[in-house]
Figure 1 (tube, rainbow, N blue to C red):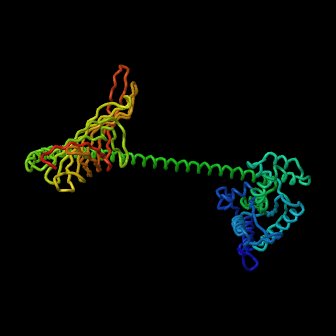
Figure 2 (figure 1 turned 30 degrees about the horizontal axis):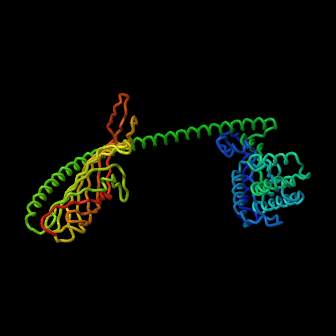
Figure 3 (figure 1 turned 120 degrees about the horizontal axis):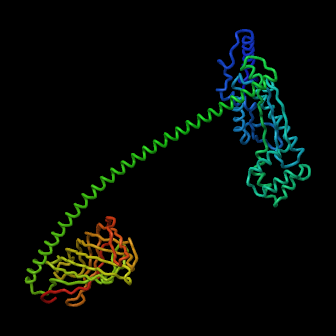
Length: 529
């Protein structure tokens, strides 16, 4: 930031510029007068001019750091580089416009309150003088403008302002001590002793750094600025009247610009609101179109599922008919004892357990069930089952209705026609259900589901003979299960009758554990084992 040739570049052309301004003033005074405001840079439309004419000065506080006991400004010390950049920007901005005349510059130095008053006063003085020296070295200000210097040993006024604006501990007590105890009557000592020093340490950390500063204040030559603008010399009375008029116009212009900015901001916000509304309407249109297409796809899928279910039922009936016929014909093929047909019942279903996921069960109520199995050839069998439940449980508070029809062809590992040990199968199952979670008297509930389902997948099982005809069988089923359902409301009316309102349709499909069977089996056959 330091400039070369002893005379800063910023001020190198100041003498020539002053000469030009002087000649311009002479020509204006002796020649054709220029009407006020015409072709002048000093107008209310200029923001810099409005700021100068209304405030009369401009200030900047620099928070510089010094080595212990030093008053010399070191640009590379701690955060000084950043503060000096702010100072350079301030000076260049203030003196950028050659038509904004500067009357004088005031430099003020401040210290915080900790320590000896005399030491703080000496430090404030030496540092503000060091600041003046830095400004003269960098900008040669003393050669162009009068500079006044003052210093404050301990800036109690600024500290009081910071305390009043804060929510620090013991705030009111601190304010009282500052306002009622003299600086030389132990004010700082009283603050250090207050509440074991907690408020003092708080101020030391948060407030004292802001007290250590130097300020530069540029005072503008308002009389010269107005005389330059009006192209005439002004008496004190004329100057005060012109200044009042210019400040009134400047404030009016500020209000006009603020209102214009407010209107522009309002217009911008309204445009953004309209844009958001247009986006919302477009998104709503897209969502409605998507919902329509989704409904069409759902209807097509429902029709496909119904057709598949009908085809599956026809195939199951045909397969059952063929299996029964083949089993009947093959009973006569050998006198050796081998199973032909078996009747089974599932104890897990009788206990009321229903698989609901990968490894979880729901407990409902007992479900009567029956299964028949035909044995074909050396290693093939076909099993068909039916299950039915349609009653309340849990003291009548809940209801469980279920029908299930299943068909399962199996391949047995051993091919000795005895059909025992491990087997694998493929199964298909369908049925309907009706579940009510709350069925207490005179209680309305919407936790009710009814619908149809189908399931298909693979099975694995093990048949353990217990006697000539009795066996125990354990099997697991897993595969894909799809259910379409209606969620409906069971409402109790004043006439004492329950009404079932149409509900909301839904669908749920998943891969899961769909069956656990622990069967007691009785097998029919001929011959001897």
